[in-house]
Amino acid sequence: MFLQKNYFTTAIAALSLCFAASSSNSAEETTVGLAVANLQADFFNQIKQSVDAEAKAKGVKLIVADAKGDAATQVDQIQDMMTRGVKAIIYIPAGATAAGVPVKAAKKANIPVVNVDRNAPDAPGDTFIATDSVSAARTLGEYVCKVTGGKASLAILQGQQGTTPEMDRDKGFNEALANCPDIKVVAKQPSKAWMQDEGFAIAQDMLQRYPNIDAFFGRADALALGAAHAVKVANVGHKVWIFGFDGDVAGLKAVRDGTMDATMTQTTQGMGKLALDSALDLIAGKQLPKEQLQEAVLTTKENVAPFIEKHP
Image 1 (cartoon, rainbow, N blue to C red):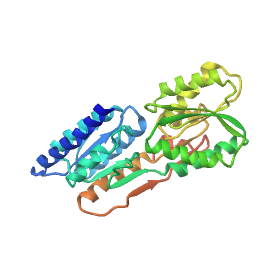
Image 2 (tube, rainbow, N blue to C red; image 1 turned 90 degrees about the vertical axis):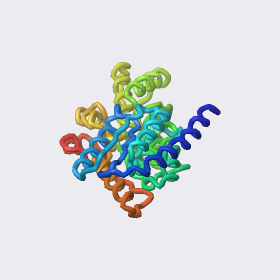
Image 3 (cartoon, rainbow, N blue to C red; image 1 turned 90 degrees about the horizontal axis):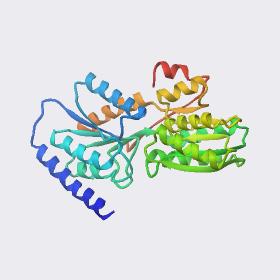
Image 4 (cartoon, helix red, strand yellow; image 1 turned 135 degrees about the vertical axis):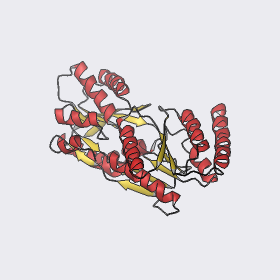
């Protein structure tokens, strides 16, 4: 732990030096950095595609870095962005650990930061763009209560501990379940990277320990899809409800096909565009709200088709 803390403390100093060195370099075009947590996740990839499209439309040079889920790698990648003269950073932290490191360094050099999806409590970005996950998870929880008849043995596949979406989805969903006391949470376990293979392994273990589980909530569609596969392999012999969150392409198709019962579709394309526009506003010296929260849409078989055709 000491070595890790020392690494990130040193990283802040190194990033600050990089900012200072690059500030004297003039650029003919505006350069914006996009630091992504993990492009293997469809959610982040959709945001990246949207940011890229908006940058091309506005003549902005975009530097993209994929941390592949590793916080230390992301610090190094952002350091490289600094040396290349970025005027702003769109930042999706790779995890809770050291999420504030790049923001602290940027603030020392007066470089604006737009945080997307995840925000560091100790060092928030100049503006934060995300789904209102508390409200969205509350809506999903109310739907779970309704369709299950208010009675279920529920297992929850959590996201990455300490991250903004995990904490907010936990809060909102618990608020809904407080009004549905006969839904019992019999198992709850975090994942490391919100991925489908994790969801399968976690759900498989849960079903072995609690064969009466009849509902799963995956805090991301990938986790929910993993749970759905575990249910199929286990051949449990009773209806098991599967609920996700994100509105990933694979998740939406699973809702259409009946593999999942519902998800919350986030406006990833809209958030990506807003992130690039916000970065440009901050570069221009405009003041933005500290939070720019977006709505998510409860998505079931009845309303999923338009989202598959064109993601919001």
